[in-house]
Each structure stands twice: as structure tokens, then as C-alpha cells.
Image (cartoon, rainbow, N blue to C red; front, side, top):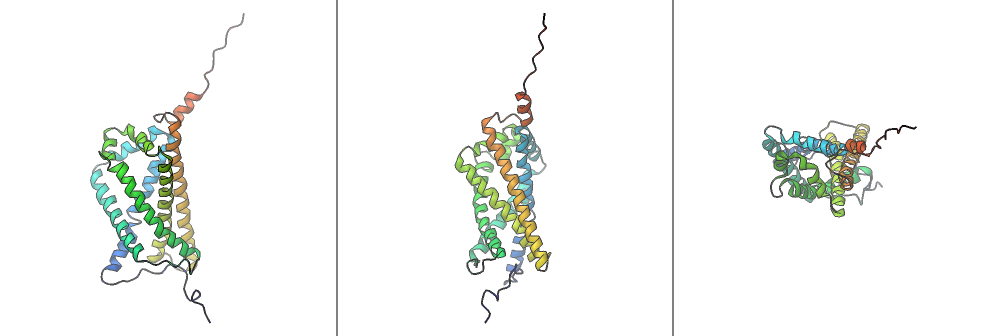
Length: 254
């Protein structure tokens, strides 16, 4: 007699047709996770990685971003509105979903469950991140537009406590996993990849993207934290130049 576990097909199920407009909303939720939210996440990781090159390089990146034309409209239409929809509808899907990891503990099920739960962590992280950097008092981007040279120090102050460092670490890891594995789910559910082997390859690609973003995020955060022990206004190259020993002129011998 075939067990219930054997009767369940492994893999990613196709998008459910649902009732009424639910199919459209699920499609829109899946799409916004890649475009534009996913693209913005990649840009955000890359921009923050400029901290590796020192405060001057990071401040220059912020100067460029804050000087973009129609910045406010780009933020709200291209980032905040799609992000809010993806987050709220994602919580709705999570609330109605039922995981079966305890019954069928294969890698795909664990990955899908982690992808849903990391979404909850990312939601809390984004709320905190926006509240403390974007909308606290005068908006962050507005202040940075007025004086981009304070951008590095502003982010650095956010990482002044060990608790904040741990929370940012969790946010980086969860955001990277949620997007990377979300790439696999998107490709599988939209029929971009079909078949067991193709889906497995795409799954590993998604995991690889997650790992790359995690490494990039952790290195960037370390750049902010380690600068606490030096002058944050100096770039790494400037500190290296200052640390070089100065050659003393040879004294003439009699």
C-alpha cells in the first residue's frame, strides 16, 4: 500500500487559479517580488557595498542617488507602493498557508517554508529600517541630499549597539534568502523552467544568488562597524597612505 508521503509529488506546485481575482493578485505578488522590489534589493546591496571603499566612496554614491531627477516619485511609485503590496499580500498568503515540513521534510519543502518565514522577518526589518533611517525626523534622503557627507556616519550610528548589529545581520540574511529562493519559485511557478532537472538547477541558482548577496551584505556591514575604530571620514586608501612610514633623509657622515 502506498504511503501518503509517496503520493505527494515533490516540487513547486503551479500557481493556483483561485476564485475571482485571486489568480491575478497572486501573479502580481509574484511579479513584484522580482520587478521592481528584487531589482531594488540588488541595487541596495551594491550601493551599500561602496562602504568597503570607505566613507568618501559611500557618500559619493549617496550623493548620486539623491541627485536623481524625480527621486521622490521614483521612490514611491517604483519602490514603496510595490513593496507595500508585496509585503501585505505576502502576509495574507502566509497566514492562509499550511506548511508540511514535519510530514514531508525534503529540501524543496524546507526551502519554501524558509522562504515564507524569512518574509516575515524581512517585513519587520524593513519597517525598522524605514522608521529609523528613512522617516525618522527629517527624512534620511532629504538630509543626505543637503549634506551627503553625513551619510556614512548616519548609517554607522545605526550599528552602534551589538543588538542593532545582530538585527541587521538577521535582516541581511533573511532578505538575501527570500529573494534568491524567490527567484526559483518565480521561475517554476511561471513556467520559465519545467521538468525536475531544470527546476533543480534553478533552485541551486537561487541558493547561489542568496549566498552572494549574504556575503556582500555582511562585508558591507563589517565595513561600517569596523570604521568605528578609525576616522569614518577617511577612505581605506587614505588610511593606508597615512600609515606608511615616512622615509627619513640620510644624514651626511663626516
